[in-house]
Length: 208
Image (tube, rainbow, N blue to C red):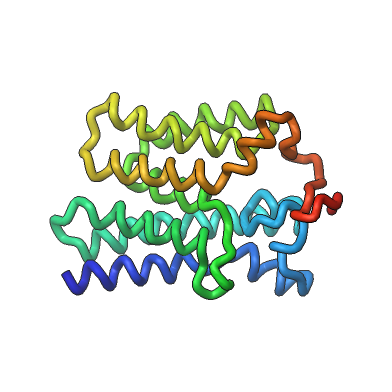
């Protein structure tokens, strides 16, 4: 039990490392949460810092999810729930990071790492559909929601174990909650498209 608690705490702390915040501070001396969409994630990194840093942030955030699942596997032994719980802990850390006053991102890249490690094929198929939706609509938020929504559906159809299914469902709920403002904007036709280069801050001002 102690090892399992340690694993979950370690994964939360790992998830709390916000690479977009760190890179923005190192490269431009800014808080990325005050620029672009205000989100501490790869898409806003692309908007504020450019392609190179965005790709690196995306890769590192995905790796956080992969690492968290493996930590759960290494320390959990036969516990089928721990890898998923560790993955969820990493996503919680990304969304509400201890090191950055609990203001983080939306957890999709880390969720990709978690789900791809737990259930590669269902996550892969959901990911392809999500990418296609982004290509055709240029709405990253829509693609993200499609990914987290379809993964548990495919898991249920394929008959995966309940720990993996419930992990994916919790991740889906987290993602929809974090994207609630994006959902409203999508419905109203005000959501920022990929490559638009602009967003709105909380005060309603246009920012680059």
